[in-house]
Image (cartoon, rainbow, N blue to C red; front, side, top):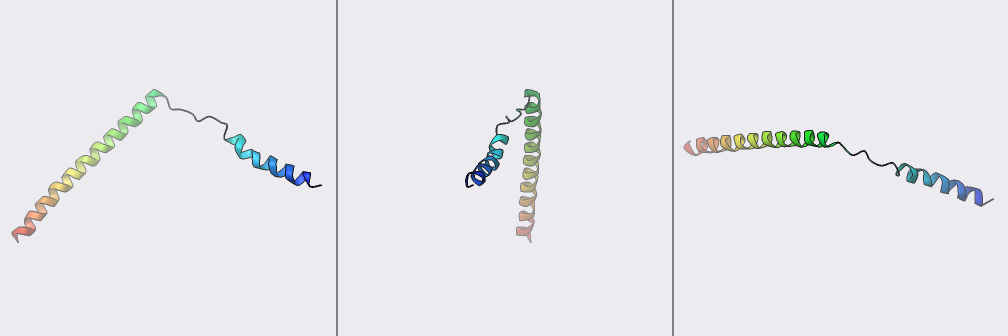
Length: 67
């Protein structure tokens, strides 16, 4: 009698382990290159915006000191 609940728990607990055995799909080299290109372009845009913000900040700081 006690064996049935134990076995059912073991079987139910093993389902997530079975799902983990599927290997992850690795991206192709072309997909990786595209992703890296997008990342580089994004980082360039961020750098341009940060530089523009820094220049504007310095200009406003100069205006404030001139007042």
